[in-house]
Length: 403
Ligand SMILES: [Zn+2]
Image (cartoon, rainbow, N blue to C red):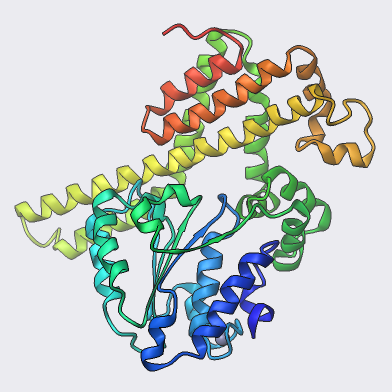
């Protein structure tokens, strides 16, 4: 079926990646018996967040599993796409990392023969989060892959995966999809009206999931509006500190909201499994299991909080990017015709952005974009969120940081 196969339909603006994957799937269908070892057993799909890495991985898996090369409708396609196919394992983590124990589990799965399908497929959605020890274990499996096993690793860039693994994979790069492609997908797939789809796609800067969230949720749009107020609030060091605290609180509340129900359910399930309520005393093992769960839940909230702060940084970057466009004359500051409006990501805030552009220099704006990038790195390296945000906002406010 090649690139026409239905399964590739959601990968908007990725024709060159789709061509490679569809051709590989077609070739794989022609292999049998010993010839299967000719299939590339390890793939690395890279692309910026929201570009559709995990969609691409699942679509590729479905194209391999489906007798039609990815019809999108048969049982193999549907179960592969939904993550329910017995021969397709999807490893995703809500934690900050994928450890050696989790990797060993999937490596065992990878070493088995497929039960129903032609291939045993392992998709690792966050290959950049595999720990060094986990990577060592994985490496052995990649060096001597069973003939029917296919690994599909996903990461933002090839550099995010350690070199020994990277060098054993065939790389497929997704790019940031164009706004108009994302908008068209929202209209076609999610039934969102054209104006809203265009607005959301523009604000989300090629992040498909984010665009969908903005288009469908007034709450998400309100959160974005609040974030876009931040540059105007940074009038004193005190104001910067207060705003940092408010942003961290917002991110924490967001993380807790997402995880609250799940936490309670997991705890109830574990207690039931341990037989709580039926015995008077808690054996040591039960205590340890509860502690493990508590640690896991804490790590999950931490990751979600960090993800929420990362979104704040992304949104703020669009503001300074707009300010810089006006300062450099790339976008007309006053002309409000459609073409100029397309030039700004936050066209609705043109007047405020124009004022901000007038009160600073391009050099200062570039320094602020640098500060945002450094804050992201700091958060990735586990700097305390409040500290990272305080330092950032003080710099964005144009106040000197004294260390
Ligand atoms: Zn199918």
